[in-house]
Structure formats: C-alpha cells, structure tokens
Length: 362
Image (cartoon, rainbow, N blue to C red; front, side, top):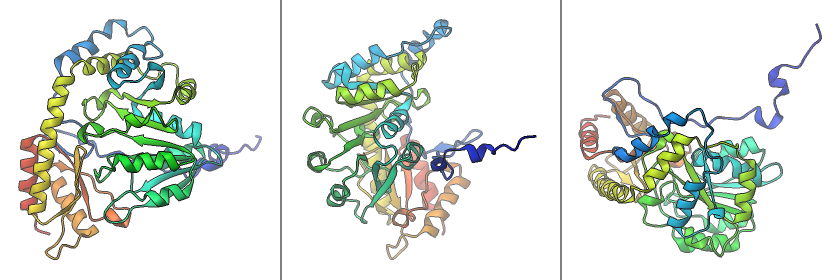
C-alpha cells in the first residue's frame, strides 16, 4: 500500500495550531439562571414568531440570496444606501469574511487585549499576523499605540468586550483619520450605549461597522448579523460569502423584529436600568466594577483590602454555578483574571444573583 500523508500532515501549516473560539456554557436541564452569553432576557414579540412560522411552507425553496428586503430596511433605518449594507450568518460570519479579505497572508491584524476572543480565530484562519495592544487597568483606549502599529486591519469592539467600557467618538474619529488600514468597529452592543460610529462612515471609506440581531433584538438563535461599509468593501465581501448564507426563517424574523422597534426600545431601556442597579449593588458589596454601556457588567469580587484575584473570581464562579447561576470567567489575561462578566437578566434573576453572592463565603 502506498504511503500517504496523514490528514493532519495535509492541513495547511498556519492552521495546525489553531485554537477554536470557546462559547459560554449551555446548561442542561431546568432551573438555571443563564447570565453568561449576553442574550436578551425578554420574550420575542409574537409577530416575529408568526413571521418565522409563515415561512415554513416554503422551506423547500432557497432563501432570497441577497437579503434584499432586510438590507433595504436596514439602509433606510440608518440613513445609508442598500449597497452599503451586507447581511451575514451572525456578525461572526462578517468578521470572518473581513479577516479573509483584508487580513490574510502578510497582513497585520490588530486587536486590543482583552477583546472579543473570536478575532484571533478569524485572523489565524486567514493566515494574518495578529498584533495585540494591551489595555491599561483603566481600559482607556490605547490610541497612540494602535496608530503606531500601522496595522492593515484593526478590530475594535465598542463598547468593549468584556468590560462594557465605551470609547469616545472623538478617539475613533482620530483613529480613522490616522490609520493606514481598515478599522472594524464591532457594535454588537451599541444599542445599549446610546452611541454609534455610523455617522463617521460617510467621510471614512476605511470604516466597517458590524452589528447583530443577537443582543438587543433577542434573536441569537436565528444567527443574523450585518455590516455597513463603503460599497467597494461591501462588494468584495458579497462576492466571498456563501450564496445563501442567511436562511429564509432568519431573514423573516429579523425583518419582523425591525418592525417592532418600539418594543425593543422599551426592552433596552428596561435592561439599562437593571444594569445600572446591578452595578450599584455590586459596588455596595465592595466590588470594583467598570462603567458598562453594554448588556453585561464586568466586576471583581474584591477582598476587604480591595484586591482582586484569580482565586476569588474562580471561587465565586463555582459558588454561583453550584447554585445554578451561570456567569463568565476569563482566566486570561492577568489584567482581568480576577473579574466576572455578568449578563444583565430580568429583575428577579438579578435579585437572586445578589442573594447568592451575599451568601458566598470565600
């Protein structure tokens, strides 16, 4: 028998050390309070469910390949043209397309550290060179260091993940003006912040703005994301995507959600109020909590001297899990190892969370 290379030997060299994105735990069974994956805690409107169900008789047919109606609606809502909009299978697909198009072999791709942990994955898949610019403890945007890096592609989450810190528009404007490469501003949590960089798009062809229906619209299970960019960029991404990348159920659900904007605006306002209440409660416990403008809170269960530690964060994480409450703990980098990320849930869920924290005895 002829000797043949093993499948791993055939694998492209740049993929052999690839580390996959690690999603939050998905609980099994009932009774869990799920505060670990930044989902909207409120019910989806009945009209959205009806729109999805209305597509079931047509499941034998392919979906509309360009998401035309959804793109046109998003364009009208946001004051851009339809050729400046692309829709993807979650915003993650769009981030992947951007990395493959503009951050591939020989390209320098920059992320702030810590940030959304998918950025290193899509950069590695594309074969780009990842450059990480670390934050200081205050999580202010390290603007000068980002500009000095002169990267071909920059990923910037605003508000930041995992802290929820919002960067001023003036700084992002300065970055767009000074950067020689493309700047992707990931606005997955923009609806909770009261700010968007979208007004900067008109005068900055190097800007890509990504958004999602998974957070403020509560449609994480449908996997719909979108992006705004210069028509030339959109055209490139459009040629690279799968022909039918967004199924007809997802298109119908997302479009129906846009027609329920008043309902979702109320949901966002309610969640932001609960978020601010949670921040106050955690600070009253002696925690250090960053000023979040997202749908989650990032805080450290500090000891009596105000010191955060990996051991205390792990202890509380396990205590909460034993009581069927899931939050997120990122043990790396060291800057955030002592912190927990807590999705803002319903008021009664947050009340139960606080009771369990009060009962914790590290």
